[in-house]
Length: 428
Image 1 (cartoon, rainbow, N blue to C red):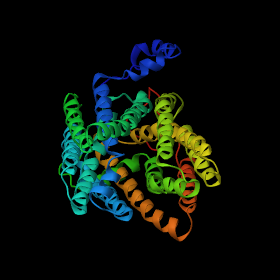
Image 2 (image 1 turned 180 degrees about the horizontal axis):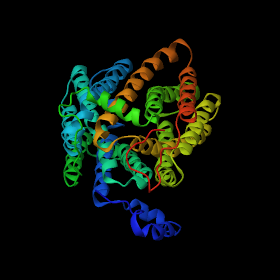
Image 3 (image 1 turned 60 degrees about the horizontal axis):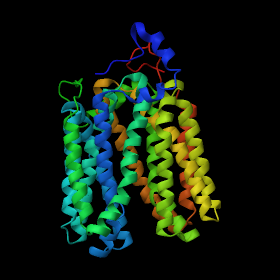
Image 4 (image 1 turned 60 degrees about the vertical axis):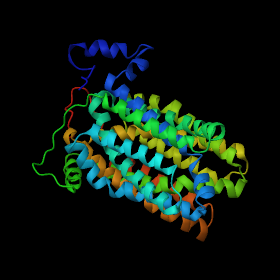
């Protein structure tokens, strides 16, 4: 495992070097294995992104599905993702991070290739459910491996770099998918995404992952809840951070579709305009996530989680008052700036309050809770949009963001530790 560059007799020299202009670039050079992991995540995100502009048209035109049927099938991903977090976190600790990541990625590759040959909605539903299973395998394992590979003093920048790698891949994917479908043929994006999944698996195999051990002699599938409880007892901040994760899951469920529907209905935005808005938001995230991760390592997690959450809530709340398309671009850039400020600190804070040998299971429990929040959010979306008003999901999302931020303000202290402190969680 990579050692902490700020420890030992060179601490003073390292702190002095931090003031030099090159220190920010040096902060990204964490380790060879972490760089490989970033490349792997970027490649698989590119594969996911390739399918983004293709799948809705494929489901509607080729399979004859209605919008409601497409939405129902898409929700299966969230359901299987949440359910299979039960064993995935345990397997990440017991079997290892790499095997879980590789297995999940290969499942994505197989299901993507299979999509090119399906003929009805039911086959599509089965493949979407399998994709949720694959994502469940990857999520806690990738988080645990990231934390395993980086020193505690660089957790913030590592989480920022991981998020940016996925954003960069996702940013290039839709454009590449559109070109492949338009120039070579409609099914080529499926073939290329499957090949990228294999490439990602090969890259992941090259990582030299540190060994981990499981505390219990006979761990069970449900031991992730016991691990979560044990870690929460060591640091009560985990209670609040997990509660925030559930609330943010609801936010994601409301935001993913509700905001786009609102743009279509209230401003008559075109598909091109919506795509450009989302691209602008992603670019802001790409540019700002790593710098805020670095600042999180230097100044702490809590301030950026609070300020970032407040910015997101304000940006979304103001969305109900827009009257022009240019205002959408401005507010989405503002909102995503807040997300870039908050996201790396969230991941770093989670790592701060987990025991090393139980990271997979604790992250599995956290991700499952967040996945349940996604399902709640998706369920609230349709009801609020139709029964109340198109503005209702946005206002509910704004309120949920305010609640999530208030939880950090009221119940969580700073979790970033000084270099001379122990690496394991301590009580608040």
